[in-house]
Image 1 (tube, protein in one colour):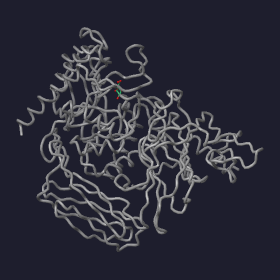
Image 2 (spheres, rainbow, N blue to C red; image 1 turned 60 degrees about the vertical axis):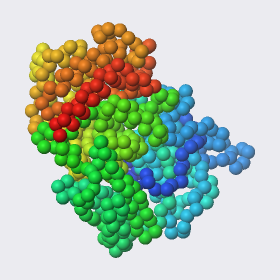
Image 3 (cartoon, rainbow, N blue to C red; image 1 turned 120 degrees about the vertical axis):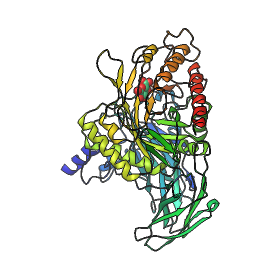
Image 4 (cartoon, protein in one colour; image 1 turned 180 degrees about the vertical axis):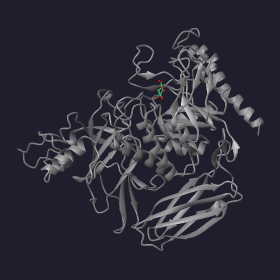
Length: 620
Ligand code: GCB
């Protein structure tokens, strides 16, 4: 009994309890799922909205799934009455449905503000498979907590709304009528990542693709490949087999570069490789060259495309392929509201957002404030957009709670593991606008160490903050112990919006005493598309355009300034933005409206970027 109470406490309070598996935040083993053929489990799913978690807890508030013989009223059992007198108080077959991938908030009006539990059910037939094959169910992302059940048995719990996870289901599938049930819960928690307070919509649901992978018994679970020496043009990496005994042969091919290697797996299924590619074209925004790579072993083959590039710093310079680069960036939320939706749900919407960034003549996107869907990053690879990718360690995380740390680390690991082969990604960012304290410094220090262990081919940063030398001083200072740890000193500043009027930018000077590149990860102000007035009238397009002019002139003078990602590409929904007639639930700092109409400030930034591009080209 005591055990079951501890278990319940552990499960419901999201705390770490030794030996109790569901919520240990253990990062999944990486799985290369994107390019593999898979049976889609997307489309229509039946749903039951369950604000009291009636399908999860009995009337003593004990989880049904911790009981030896769960009641038929536990929703995950997907039960049907056998006798006319049977009392079963739910019926998935008669329930409403939602589209997956997709958030629930924009699919059903009554779910617009909903934060709580929704049960999702999909029934499906198992695809044809050989007896020795293995199957995995893969989720691109579920916001925020997912309790997953297959045919009445729990597969596991996943925490974190923006990273992929999977379960092996070999031997657990029936030929017909499999019932996959996910209890999705997007309630916010003080100890969670992100915490209670954010400036974006808490879209709930199975927001990314679900698919069923069928692989041979021994299969290629993962690989990593990167340019590891620019001078020697060395490419190195590794392949990881799952189900291997050791000694298996692995073929690695990059046909366009005439690379054909035969590797041998060690007893853990791993094989390292290294080769030189003297004639390879390096990936860059101007030439986003991708090479096909094929890995095969036994009955399994995996095909992907990879770019080869290096990113480094030298003093205050940022170097792409050894040459200074200026990041003509823009921050982007993973939201596409133009057609009524919310969270981006397919590659077409992702492509539209990135093409808006291209129209601005951007070569860089800051994907804020959480890992975006994989299409976004892969399209950036193809379209020549450098990427900053971050985890939702945002504002006031509970720095002292070990479970919060483990949660953040699991999200960081999953982000890095998913996107480690994308040349476009040059920066992993650890946090956004977090208040300096010993506990925070320690937390972020640990995260930085983890990130470097997982990937030493990219830069680390974090969006920090500025303060003034003293009250009434116009000397803005960036001084943060985190700046010592990261590779690029990045900070957000809102002079002209939250901090004085745009003219203040004429007076402010900057003190940033690190021998590192300086990046302004946010600045900006709001404007409602079509609202006009003079440059002193807040929320007009003229005010915003003026603020951009003043801000750009100021930041361009900062020593070591290597780029910026103003806030933000397009207007996005936020429950903090309630001003009627202007905001109407939207943060209006977009350079485009949510419908994709450019505002005046768009042209100010584009002009600045066009000139920067010309001057950097002239200097090379
Ligand atoms: C910030 C945050 C961003 C907000 C933005 C704003 O500093 O990093 O998430 O949306 O300001 O509009 O206030």
